[in-house]
Image 1: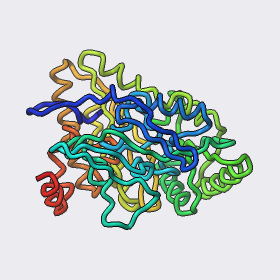
Image 2: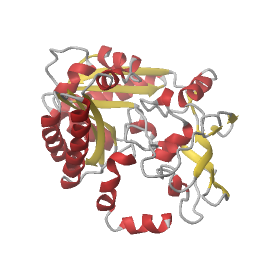
Image 3: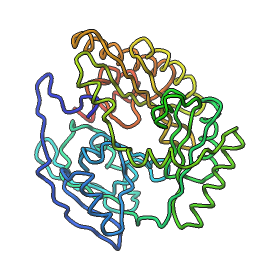
Image 4: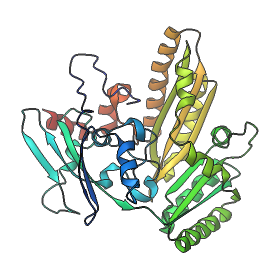
Length: 366
């Protein structure tokens, strides 16, 4: 967890489930897979891929995370604009409650039998019980994929194009838009001078072509210019690489952080402007991109890269980063986390963020 979810700081237990690593059943008729909670996501995806199937859940941590962890942190993946987060992909699960009671939750395409109890534990980060096995939806691997990279004049133009795409009813499996600072990293070109969008469609060859054509028309209407598929294709090849951040953190005094928030379409530009401005004093580079889009809003991912004079100064700066980032997000009406979860980094801000619903969470925990 990049936000300190499993760190035991004030008493408690960190429970390792990675030896619970059995794939229980692959159901090709109902397109479900059931696996124990400790199964590695990348290993499961590789096993399914060999049989022509996919989870369509692709977090950057795919090969470092577990299926139970995805539920516990309410994770999402790089293709969520088309397939949704783990809450849409999860059919059901088994969990052990704190008194030892074993419960099975969900299991059908949809139920109207009381509240959807899956959501009591999805996102609970280990506080309400232990998830022991998970059933997820499966998809057939698609016949064809098409990619394109599109430049825009500025951030508002690209964000407006994303909104129009989501309202059109066409859901690209890949939709990521980088400000000019992160575009230089995404394009592997230090002189790159424009914000850039990576776009991908999939399906039958004809459908992938048609959807790409329609999406490029939307981009053109917002001033976008297609520059070829190589940028998006290059990103697909290295999309699990987290080494830029890790290398900085491995150096004495290195400061690197990833912060993901979300807001509505009407509020996301204000959050982007305020958050990138608030983070500027803490890092040499502040990178920003938009992904995980919906009809009513989008997530914003901010990356900080820098260096402090000493490890102690770096630790102090990290605390200041989170204080400023969360305060700025709340002040601009944003959501504290889109997919990384709460952890230690965000926990003190949760009561304010949840408002009156904090009382409901307290009562459930009690």
